[in-house]
Image 1 (cartoon, rainbow, N blue to C red):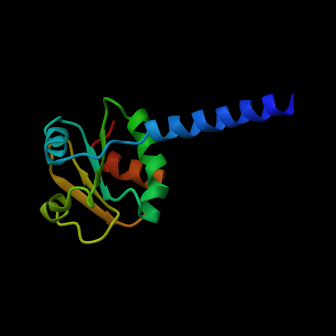
Image 2: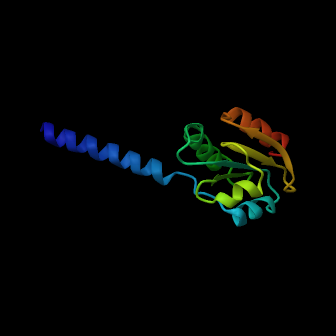
Length: 130
């Protein structure tokens, strides 16, 4: 009986961990960023790495915003350690760096370091989120 309970708990834990990994935002490339900027929607592009501590803290926030703002804004993550050229292309000097773009694709704000959900929403609203 105890083994069945243990097995059930272990299975539930593993499924939760797997689904959390599956929810991870895919790393964007330059083409995906350009498509987002041409979409007519405000965009936040987060440049970081899957292994940096502040980036890891931001991951669930970005995933949640991506779900909540679907169709209204673009929320992107780019792993600059996997795509080393993109950091230079967007003048990223430290990670994480968030770049906010208005609906016309123009950069309107840049932030370096951890940023919480409320502040991301505030900047997206300033960039035209309705």
